[in-house]
Length: 273
Image (cartoon, rainbow, N blue to C red; front, side, top):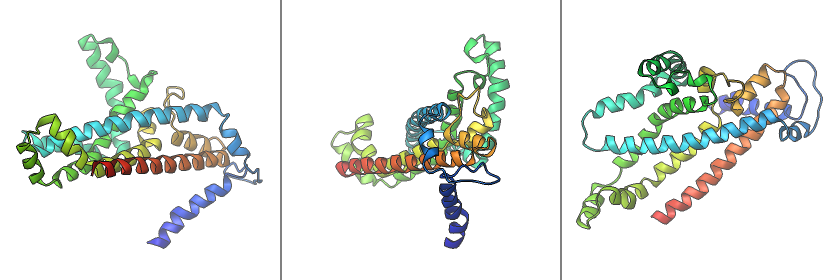
């Protein structure tokens, strides 16, 4: 297994790093250019705009998906009606896959929502949001729905691992409702919260599938993420080496963000213990 990982992951990654120091277009001859590709990244407006969109999208989606997932997990952990129906609803996109869900919502936003908006006389819903400057919010809605499946499972596992004796003791001390959640439940969910925040931020910084399925980076380049830009210009625009440098920078950013998240959230866990 380790050999396969090295052959199909490590070697391609190292080759990408190597080519980031060249002027290779993906075919033909190439020459070493040193750090020229990396120096040019910081003056490229397309890349700057893609990073701006990606970071904004990642922050908003990470926050929303964790809030909604935590609420869902608490609901599923309680004694409520239609529990199985809710489980089926939130887990459905996890079974279908990101691309399929993206294509489905592409049709919904293009046909069903505008039709319903016109019938109800709601102007904001009468147009396809994916064709406007607010397209990011359509992608966020879909990304949150997809992401809630995995995150809810993590939170639900964390909730079910909490000893019921803790809640009984809290009840005797008068802790209930929001107070019990903030003082007992949430602190005990700290490890689950750390996992979900780190994985969510990493996944959304590398967002690709849902954008390709729903907007293809448009309208214009308003929803072009870094991963989409790397694919389009690296494989279709003759910028293989240049976008390899962009990919290396993205990799470093994701690693650094994950590292600082872990450090910060682990310190928080220690304080709550």
